[in-house]
Length: 114
Length: 114
Image 1 (tube, rainbow over the protein chains, first blue to last red):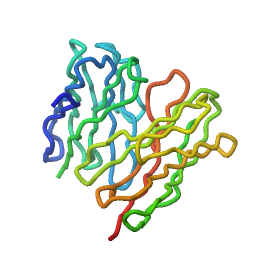
Image 2: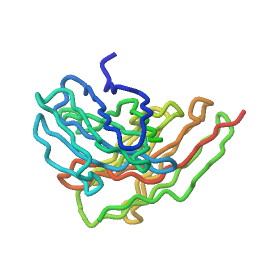
Image 3: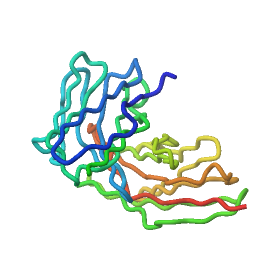
Image 4: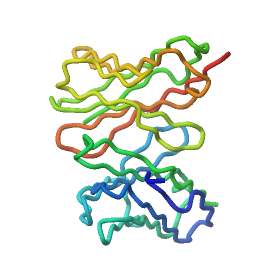
């Protein structure tokens, strides 16, 4: 399977704990995006990387959130001191200018904060 | 600011019939791209079709076509010959200018019936 993959698919945690999600983009894609989707809503943009550089961050990305893409390949999204309001689906997407910059999404990580 | 509006929270269609899902957008940027994604219950966002603001013809991809009316700022998705597997949530999204993030609408839940 050469699509975008995310791990884990589901995460249940207690309020106050830290969690980390991983995204592996399509191999030839140099751009990587994180979105958050809450129930009944469309995805909302969180942040974007071109290669290893984080070029844009949404105001939704509070200080408790940090994203990295250290070698320009996979990316991690960490949430520190989780709150119940962080419960959502976290979606990763990747794209390449060679393919009209169309974003291809992974299956998402569903986070539940108890 | 960019905004996508999808006014149909839910739609029903009979198998083999055509259905139109509405999408209107708002942007002051003359250069933009419009996307439709399908999200089944499994959660993954599946890219369906893309329309650029300068494209002269409406986009088509198999059973999907995009009815692009620039003056009305609408980009409706038409699905022909509906199949049971088309039952899913459908999101309209926009990318503006040289930006990279997608702005999504709230989605339309489509149910295909026998």
